[in-house]
Length: 324
Image 1 (cartoon, helix red, strand yellow):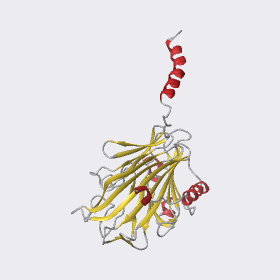
Image 2 (cartoon, rainbow, N blue to C red; image 1 turned 60 degrees about the vertical axis):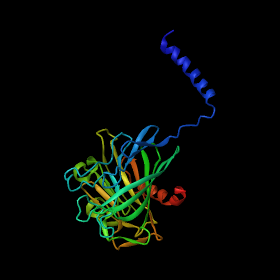
Image 3 (cartoon, rainbow, N blue to C red; image 1 turned 120 degrees about the vertical axis):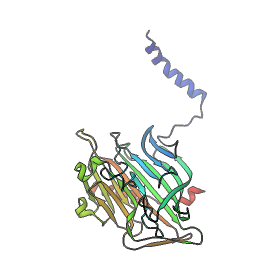
Image 4 (cartoon, rainbow, N blue to C red; image 1 turned 45 degrees about the horizontal axis):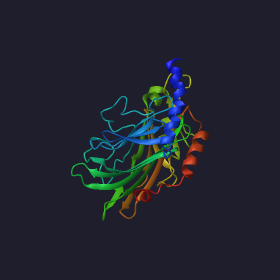
């Protein structure tokens, strides 16, 4: 008898013996968060990375990269394909704002520069249908490291149809330092933004922008209020090599439906304070929620709306309960 036949016969025996030896062994969760070197948390489904949260203290702010499709290709990129120097802050998916207490946390080369620095990772959660990381960030003025905002951020990856369709949900709670106030100034830059892959961009790849109002591409969508905005295009040369990202604003967020800052050159952002400033204290905190629906194909307006409604109906995360 061949060795391979013997191995095939023996394999079930070995498995049975292992199960008998470890009767209390638990199933491995399908979704897991794996901490990696250099301040990275990898979100994996059945051992396959969906995205990773980067928060190296040497960076200007945390970001998520890559966002992987079913084709194994990232739907986002690091930096502008034609202007990487002045757009060095375009790091895949990021959360930031260009005017907090007069400090610019958006760009990398501001006159009054801010940085978002992770203080600690507070909590991990693995399950079959989701994985979670909770972290505490300080928004600081770069010149003296004075704290302007204290942020609790929860990142959740939830597969809907494996790598073909999944959610990255972002909850963030902001508080001012004790005894202080902090103000998000009026701006179209911030709070959540996405730099899509070059091949998805309207200008570079012939992609498509669509918002909840049925408006298409930058000429119609730019700075217009919406519940969500989708950016889709080609990611491989396969006949079915299309995918995209729908950025969704939660109805509980301020000034909803909010303006979306979207460009044909390959980026989109959901604005927090496009019309008026927003002031918080240590007692009067701000909780915002966003989601990115990562999907295969080029969805219709109706398909995106179904996903937004499902997201909007989910209960808000209780960040205080998780910290306990």
